[in-house]
Length: 117
Image 1 (cartoon, rainbow, N blue to C red):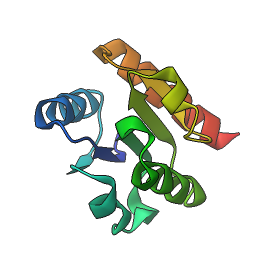
Image 2 (image 1 turned 135 degrees about the vertical axis):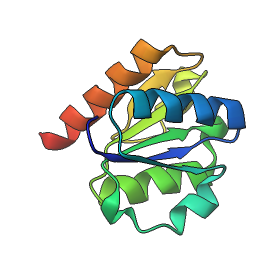
Image 3 (image 1 turned 60 degrees about the horizontal axis):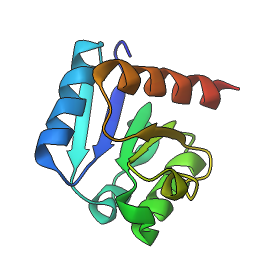
């Protein structure tokens, strides 16, 4: 995670802050947080090396955000308590909620490896 710029899209502030703290502790240089997919879609994705997004029950906005990130070749980790919902996010690395620090970091590493292939 050393030096990367990450995007976190999560509605719950405390969850987003926890993800940010974990990524920064792992060496992320910058973490941008948005609380919904619509505001995140307005961003320029070219500077991001990783995105962690909340599935939000498979909302069309979140699915579209994931597709836009993947088109920009940004590795995506999608978080959800519902495995069926995670399947809607093509090309993303799934992470079941609730998750701990180790699981988050493992999913981030897996997503970045997947993008390199």
